[in-house]
Length: 261
Image (cartoon, rainbow, N blue to C red; front, top):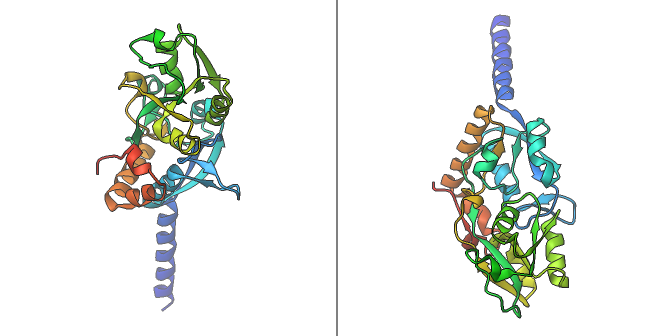
């Protein structure tokens, strides 16, 4: 009888150890700046948004013990390289330039890239005609694909004003201190909905600068974690949970492209 009990206890310990080993600790890095509807803090100081829902579902699917860590956007890649975080989960576009220093998971959403401005503005922005915005002021968030695009195509004809956050750029647009702001259509939708005097002035064509959608940034040597995150993303999409999360945010389903299941 004692041997049987001992065997049961030993088996339970081994089973518990196996479960514990599966619960890998992962630090998820999110940009400290709000980026609705993907990531922002509610009135209780809690992070909410589509990307917040998605990372939790992926971590649950893969039995990962995930902790959210706030990092300034312009320091988020160094934070990954210095192992202060394990994943960048903050609407980071998958570009060739970034892939030189970090790796990415599969794409977990994509959206159009646009320029917005006042309805009263009569300019006709065209990235093939840099002088179409000659003398104008364009606001963009620093260290983004949008900043790179605007600087490449309009940097010699317009003034490009860089901001630490999208909110600050939009505040200056509303105040008339810049003529336009360029960002993803999804992140600009809430501003356009609440500010009817502004509208989309241009939808930029596909360009290598914009990359291949948004994915989770990981260190190049972290292949095991990348595989787990990819599996989690695929499972969340296949199960229908992805669509359920998207449906929580009005208009989001029409504004983003989801991964293929």
